Image (cartoon, rainbow, N blue to C red; front, top):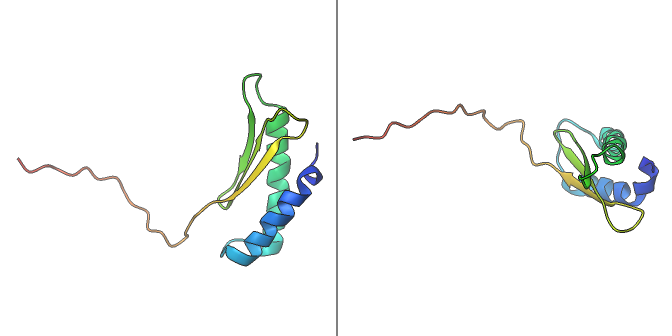
Length: 100
């Protein structure tokens, strides 16, 4: 199994990325390279998973790829775009004192 096994899924994900995703960190060309790299990592995780595990997962800040075991020879492939904003303020955990 290689990244080209999932070429159709990657092509469709890149079309969606180009049309719908606004990403300051990755231009579409970088997204394609990242997608291929993550797919290879997901395949490696899938092929080397433990005996009771059914998934191989690889992710970065923008993309998540999940390969899931099926009854057939080819695993299901899920490619997800992670919602992230570089402008989101980091919050610190503060406990609220209750007024008693």
